Length: 303
Image 1: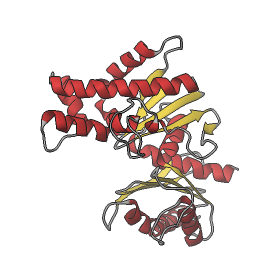
Image 2 (image 1 turned 120 degrees about the horizontal axis):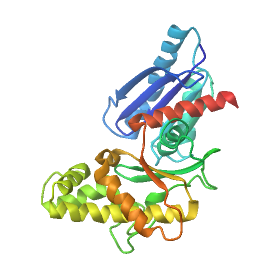
Image 3 (image 1 turned 180 degrees about the vertical axis):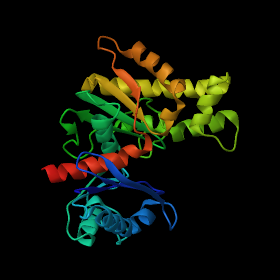
Image 4 (image 1 turned 90 degrees about the vertical axis):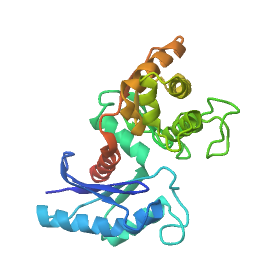
């Protein structure tokens, strides 16, 4: 049976699958980084893992995988020093995997774009000709989906909604500017604000949302401030893109209606003359990046 390898890489491990020509998941496996957290530790084990998957596919289905798709963390540059030389880059990863697997084709994409592709074809964006996918975890990342696929932009930076300034003069963002959406509405930013407001040594964003829902005034203030900042960022993107659907994924989406009810209300208040887009949770969870990587590998073969 023809199949491809799909790999979804995070800082702490890798999710992998063998995917059939019709998109069927033939085999799935997750593996934590064995040499400590961080992208370098994960990447050191990626080729051996891919080799194991290829051998498993050959044993089970009688043929070896014909292509590999990899979803990588968004901060991995296209070019750079490469794996094994003190850094990571997509071209280095692609070359190492292709060479190690007998020169089969390998395609890489940032995890948020791979996840958006999967949501567009198989999940919450299915049937939407234009959508914006926003993942909210330790950072806010975005991807622009159309009926043609995922937009990359002229310099491979399309969809970077996390670096839209929504609170000028606000907290410093990792990019060096102040008041970016990433710095005020990511799960990490909410956790920091909630820790400061509550005095708790350990705090997390979902816990803040839960406390807000239970009537904690300090938590409600932190949560509402983040929701309004997120709404401002979404309105800016929607004004430019005219998306039919806004898909919210990542860990913060697990808050459910504690997030989505006030977020929809805040967007409606700001929408002005435009149509209100649908605002929906992502459907594929933390498997989306790996699924999207499989779709990218299938597209290589179809092309």
